[in-house]
Length: 350
Image 1 (cartoon, one colour):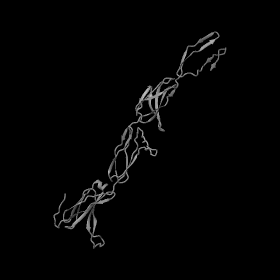
Image 2: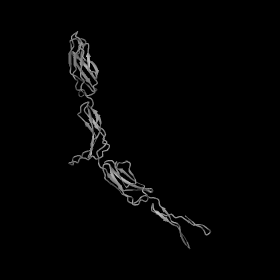
Image 3: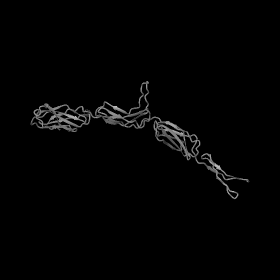
Image 4: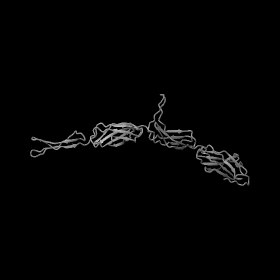
């Protein structure tokens, strides 16, 4: 803008816009006034342009790569164009949608990172910033070394039947390494596939508790899950011990029996049934068989004895015990005893 003073007294004022200057640089200015008689200089004024973005070559270097650590160093930008306010070291991975990670922010010219993920493929970038902007370095790729797996979760066990369990599991949360396929010997041979995460275990014992643990392994080590227990389903019982029958009096017999072991009952024991082999009254039912097994009593599994009363004196009676789980039942072998004579003193069994 220019203002002029006419001969009557108008003053000329000038403003000058200097362009194409370097950022963050001191410039010295003076104004010279000149007329036909000579010139005069104003006092000098020094002005500094604002900071700009750094420019030049910003190189990032990485060394000492291990499974979880790496050392980084970098040079100062060739043209800082201001006071460097901070260096920021960030990374990204090849996983889609995963956000960028910030690892360091400060004024140092190097840093050692110790919390990196094993077997991760990182792409690191450094930015140097002034108040006027930032300059990014070249991308530096770093593939971390392998480490033993971590975070192997427990197995999941689902009983299929009395002899089969379906066992499955998830891969470890941190594989920390690579599964290397086995090389083939001939063109017709198929390459080995990645490790399975499911197993069908067959030929097991019915209603038997089994314990499983999964180990995940890479070239550097293993990770073990916790042990997990599960039972196969129940099956029809195999065997019931033979009862013992002892006389108490002329009209009573005491029947006792032992609880079958878990391998024989093959399930949760629910009830016992005590049977007696009785002679039938053919006058009432001529078509009935001469003898028939009749239920004396059904007992819960915690009771292992029963006194049978109202029997005939000096008579042989035959008994058997049936044990049942939720799937089926099994009968014991038969056991017999004779009631006492009429008038015989009653015997008490502890």
